[in-house]
Length: 536
Image (cartoon, rainbow, N blue to C red; front, side):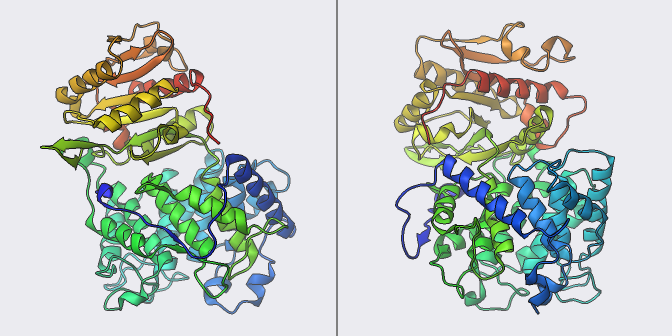
C-alpha cells in the first residue's frame, strides 16, 4: 500500500470540537452508552424494539435477531462480561435463535469471537459460517455478493454484502475453514463494482454515475478488500518480494480523502454512526491508525463527545438503539490496549524519499497480536503508524515494530523522533525479513547512531525476556536475539536471521511455537519495563 502518497483530508462540516476526547471521556461515553442499551433490553433480547415493528424497510423487518446481535456485539466490545446477569440471557438467546438475514447473521458471527472459546461457541461460529457461505450469490453478475435474505435471485447490494463478508471473516477467525475461492470471488466482485473514481454505490456496480458513490459504501468496499487481500496475499508474504500493493484499495482510500465528511446533526444527511463503524472496520482490517497524519479515532471520538445525549444514546436517522450500538463499536476500538505499532518508513533514493519494504507481510503483526491476546486472556489491538507525528503519539503501544529487507536510511528528523521515543520509554523491535543481512547490519548501525555509547549483544539465556511467560530452555530451536540496553532496560531488539514474521503472516504455529512465544515474552517485558506515559 502506498499510503505515503495519500494525504487524508477530513472535513468537519459545522462546529469543530474545542477539545479532544481523552481516554477518561471515552470511558464515560462507553459507560453511558452501555447503560442506555441495557435500558432498551426487554427480557432476554432486543427484538421487541419498536424500531423493528414500525419500520417497513425490508432490510430491517427481515433481519430478526439482528437487533439483539448488534446490542450484544456492542456490549461485549465495550468490555461487558459474558457472565453479567443482564447479558448472559441474551447470549443464550442468540445461541438458540434461528437467524436467516445476512445483516443479522453477520453481526451474530462477531459475537462468538468475543466469548471464551469452548465447543459450543465453536459450533455456533461454524454454524453461522456455513449459513453465510451458503447464502453467497453464485450467478454471474452477482457472484460473491449478498441480498437481505438467502434466495436464488440475482439481486444484491453492497451494504448487505459487507455484512456477509464481515460474518465470514469472523467465522474464519474462529477457525472455520473458508475456501480460498470464496475470497477470490468476493475480491473480484467488489473490484468489478468499483467506480472509476474509486468509490462504491449502494446498488450493483457499473455503469453508474460518480454521484452514486457514498462514503458508507466506499468504506465498506475498502474494508472488504483489505479482508480479501489478507487471505489472497498470505502465501506471498512468505517471500521477500516487496510490499503487497492493491490499486483498488489505493483508489478507494483516495476517494475517501476527497469525500469524507462528518456532518452537523441533519437527520436527512449522512448516517454518521453507520459511517463511523465503517471507518472503524477499515482500521480493524488494515491496522492504520492514521490516514496521512490524522488520527481517525481521535477525530471520531471528539465528534461523538459533542453528540451524546443525556440518556447515553446517540441519534441520527434511525432508532437510537442501532445508532448507539454503532457508536459504542467505534469507541470500543480505543479500549483494548495497543500491543504493537507497526512502522511505515521510507528510504532515500538519491535524496528523494521512497517507500521501504515495511509491509511485505501485511498480517504478521495482526496475527501475532491476536495470538498473544489469547495467551494472556486479554484482547489486544495493533496499528500502523508513521514518523510524521510526535514521539509521544508513538507511545500508544510499548513496542514499535520495524521490518524489511533493505538497508535502513532514516532522515535526521526521523532519527530525532526515534531517539526521543526510545528515551521516553519505548522499545523498537526489528525483524530482518528473510534474514536479510543488509537490514540487520543497518539496524545495528542505527542503534550505534542513536546511542554511540551502547552496543548490541546476544541476549543471555537467563535474561528476563526468556522467562516472562514462556521459558527458553523448553524451546527446541533457540533463535538468535540481539539487543541494545542502557543498563536499565532493553531499548532495541533485533531478530537477525530466524524471520518469525514469515510464520506470523501465514499463521504457522505448529513446529514454530518458539517464534510466537518469544514475542509474547517481549511484549510482557515491554509492559513491565515501560516508563509511564504523560499522554492523555
